[in-house]
Length: 460
Image 1 (cartoon, one colour):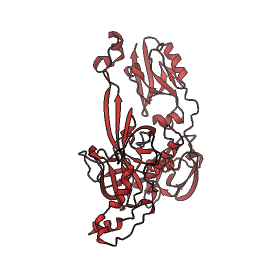
Image 2 (tube, rainbow, N blue to C red):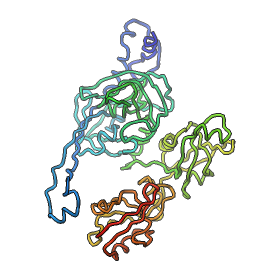
Image 3 (cartoon, one colour):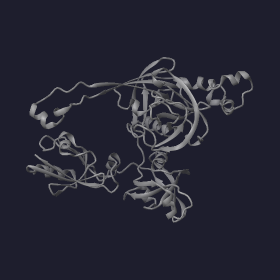
Image 4 (cartoon, rainbow, N blue to C red):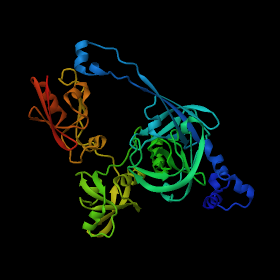
């Protein structure tokens, strides 16, 4: 009976742009179910076939640079070809398409097939592994059907939704369900990190990048992953909200090659019941600031360690990923209003949205063949480097960006912060270059790795 009522409420007019929810007036309309909505939306959902070429890997002794030097050049194994299958959604009549980064992000060749069987070559114009979003541009495309992006902040738990995609490569398929949760963060699989819409509409492999639409045919999210122990749909799927897709599309049209997200310059944690009690609050809410970079725009707006951010632009935030989502959809160059809770008092602060400063200069350096560790890439720590390598906000000095083949043998890892080499302090990449030129038969690295002191010794 309940599902019948849902179906009655879901019937819409034939064109999504003019649609409004209404009660059907005849048995014929009742029998149509979701057909009018699907008929209008499905032409804008595409199948994506991606070809990824991955380099072959040396195995065994020949993966070690020492043995490669000893035995001479060894033929590299053949590259591996990996095929990826997924879905996408057309966002504009001139051929902009959104999909998941894990479907197309590393592809060397992308083929897009529309619902009417037309085929297009495509390229990724903007991709972001962290958000698992990629914007493609179809070659020689015009007058394409597309879906209208809805304000995903208006979506409510319990709304009827449809998932359209290409599960298992069997062809375009539609499944129905409801929005079963909002503000899901840290629960999706894969590389995506952020804020998701949860749905019980069936989502399976191949649905990735497909559309999650409402009963008016508007796009509210991009299906990205499922929560499953078996690999099949168990009724818990996650979609990237349309508001984030809107910002990706805006940046792609502006010519950005990588997604520009604002820098908060802070670390925080969700408020627990224990913290709320210590603050004298009746219930936990918001994100408690645990660390601030000296140049943090949040700190410059008047926040300090121990303060709580409860809202961004009037929307509740209860995790760092929710807070970053709110800042990301606002975009760099503007401001957001953050609600600050301190000593039981609330006020609002305007926070500038800015990229991480690339000051002092990173001085990125790759050691050449004259060094004892050729191929080692290092940089001077600054806010931009901290964000890119996910370093502690208090980090300073010289960081390893790529250990290179000889650095790996020495035990170095990406993100290691070097404090001294052979007892000599290194504060800039040039200091490291100089120390390595004067080294003897031994190397000793004093460094910080994930906040813990580590000492490495290598005999040359």
